[in-house]
Image (cartoon, rainbow, N blue to C red; front, side, top):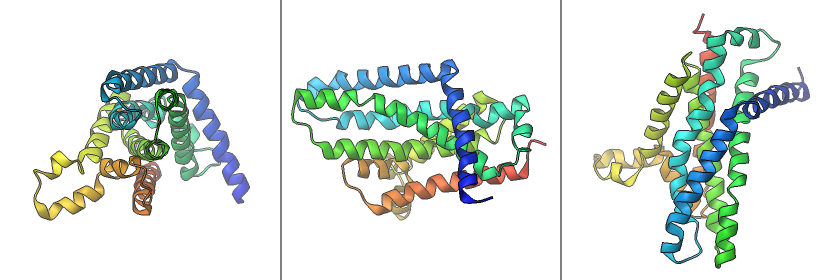
Length: 244
C-alpha cells in the first residue's frame, strides 16, 4: 500500500466518522452548549474589565473543553464495541493506525469547526476596542493543541470500555487530572522536588504559555508528544483485541 492509498483510506474513514456527528443530535447539542456557555462566561465579565481583551475567554475555555471533549470521544470506540461493529471495522483491509487516526481527526475537525464559530467573540471585542491579536491567535492555537490532547486521551479511554457513560466519566477525570497537575494551586502544596516535573507534565501550564501569544517549541513538542502517546496506546489496545 503506497502513501496515497494509505491517506485515502484515512480520509474515507474520517469522512464517515465526521458525518456521523452531524447525523446525530450530539453535534448540535455540543455546538449549542459550547457557544452559549462560552459567550455567557465571556460577556458576563467583559464589560466589567473595561478593556478589549479575550484573555478571560481563553481562561474559561479549557474548563469548557474538559466536559465537552470526553462527550465527543466517549462513543467512538465504546459504541462500536457494544454494538459489535468494531469486529467488522477491523476485519476491513485497514490498519489499526488508520482506524485510530480517522476517529481522532474527525473529532478534532469537529472541535475546530466549533472553535471557528466562536470567532464572533474576538470580532466583537475588536469592534468595541483595540484588540491585541497576539493573545487571540495564541489562544486559539493553544485551544487546538489542548483540545487535541483531551481528544487523544478521551479516545484512548473509550477504547477500554463498552459503556459510553463510563468512558465519559473516566475521560473527564483523566483530562481533569492531566490539566491541573501543573496548576499553581496544586504546585503550591506539592513537594518542591516534584514541582518542575509536575509543571512540565500539566496540560494547563503549556496552554497558558501559548495563550499569552508566546510560541515556544517545547510547548508545541509537548502537546504533539502527548497526543502521539495516547494515540499509540489506543493502537496497542486495539491490537490486543481485549474485548474478545
